[in-house]
Image (cartoon, rainbow, N blue to C red; front, side, top):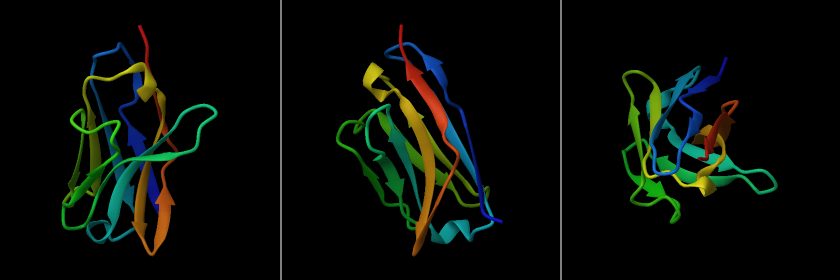
Length: 114
């Protein structure tokens, strides 16, 4: 059974930091491209960052220099370190695994507000 458990979301002030974690099970984790997507109210889901099985990373322009994606294949974990958070980063963040088929986590809410 494929399962993703996201954690680390919450309420943070502008300029603050959060670290999202996603624990994956039921897949050969090391073979998958892992990603973080987000969806704000009234907007389409968008890619935030991804990391391939080889460790190559890709970021949305809006988060470059502020967010860092990483993975630990030994623990089947993927992380998203988010720094210098802005109100426009407010969204539900989803963990994604992609290799021929895509799997999604249930999402974790990130709210950036003073």
